[in-house]
Image (cartoon, rainbow, N blue to C red; front, top):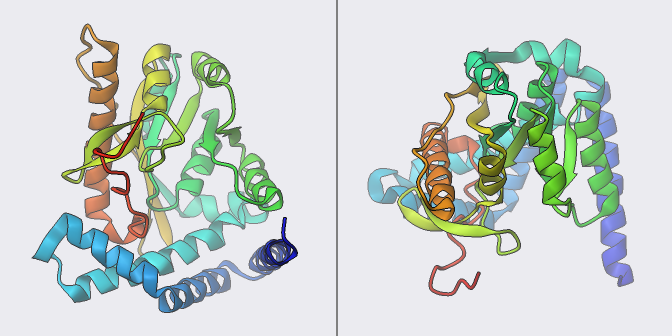
Length: 303
């Protein structure tokens, strides 16, 4: 690795460790304030990301959202993200006594009913709200919960992230893990949290309507879930007033199975996306609009 790039990585890791240490020794109120300030600073400096968010909001909502509304959505997203990060890095020291009491649980009976069948649960979610807290809270509620996490570019940062998840009782599967290992996890009746709102040519995907536009969408989790006979339960953890959270387990998604497995995979994936679309619409300032969900064109995509 070139020395300049290595130096940049070293500085990033050192800064991350310093920030984590600081956010863990100060009161939560100050940690939340710090997260908000960092988020606001990032919003102020990231002109390209502000443009991307406004562009993607325009693709979906057109003129129904005013420029000032788009501006406010972008600003609030960065602030919310900074606050979420401040809580996530406090998991190891402050989760049980400080963060967990601030989460209101809604619809737990939906998850209990699905888990009781003993064939595994696909926890369907996306990059909205505090999805790291979603996994940690699910584990704290007694579900054996795992997530599939893409490895970070620096192993030291990846170690920090995975260690934080594991300290909260969440099992981490790398994207390089064998599908058989994930299938066994589901077959044992456990929960697998999956983020379905990514555009990536590196994973098995199909084009599914997302907010009215075709978008490349991962289908590997749907294939594994259907093969295991798992339940698909949409679940989200969004920020609420007063720096609190609401974790919601929605009713299980079901489809009428047909004679063609690939069609079933498409129909289930589309049904999951439709639920996620609705949640994003209700919490626009908590979804990652800066990522181009429609980056890959169907005309240029080669499976």
